[in-house]
Every structure is written in structure tokens, then in C-alpha cells.
Length: 78
Image 1 (cartoon, rainbow, N blue to C red):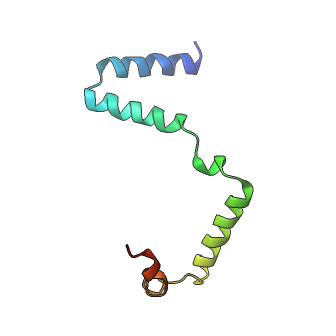
Image 2: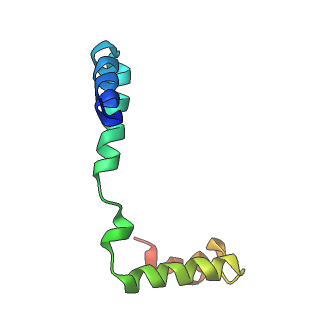
């Protein structure tokens, strides 16, 4: 019997005996692994732009939130 077959049988047994809370956790685990990561769905240009921004922040080139809000906050007011 293959390892995958053994694992499937063990998982089925766990699921049959699981509480509602455990079933919800397993469900969300499978749901999360079935969803595509948004990173893989954006263009390589967008990925590069995000990586560049992260590198800038890592190098201390970011602008503090307070400073941005002081300069641009008036445009965000309702």
C-alpha cells in the first residue's frame, strides 16, 4: 500500500472522529491551500514595483505616516 493511500485512510479516520471545531479548521486549511496566492496572479511589473518598495523601506527610504498625512491629509478629508 502506498504512503499516499495510508495517509488518505488516516485522514479519513481523523475526519470521521473530528469535532465540529476541528472540521472547520481542516476545512479552512484545505480552502487556503486551494486558493491561488494573489502574488502569483499579479504581473511581473507589479511584483517588481512591490519588491522595489520593500527594498526602499528596508533601506530607510520610507516616509513616516504622520509626514504623509500632514502633506496629503487635506485631500483625504470628506
